Length: 185
Image 1 (cartoon, rainbow, N blue to C red):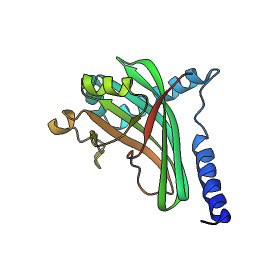
Image 2 (cartoon, one colour):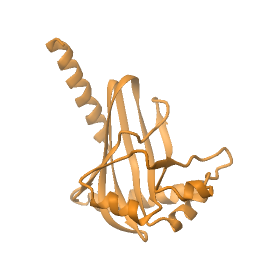
Image 3 (tube, helix red, strand yellow):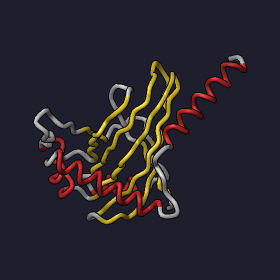
């Protein structure tokens, strides 16, 4: 790989991560602002997809990520910050980071929530140095009627992800390859 290509790749990664970090503050009064964003995100989800209230009631905890920003030009990245709530009280703050390679161009923002349906899944998430979204993650997708597909099989999954509020120019949003790390406000 020539030095020009390396510089281009490094610049692409740096630019994507800089774009991804926009609008995700924490520190100073950032924890209060982040909690306010989590409240607004939760309220939006419950208002638009009432079935998520049932998921929250049955879950042992929910990681709310009110804003994740992704961008890329062949090399991409994404970043967001959120709060883990147990019994609707914030217990920890987390960042979500993602890197991707391939045919891609554009940027998007979205919110998501991870519903931990078993105590074992929640404990594993909290104990880990960093948790990567993987095979134990199941997506619940809103249908055209505004309800959420929350069948018995989905409710028995260890972790259920709901991705919503998408805007931007990259088609689709997936959490595969996303790493969650505890942060200190």
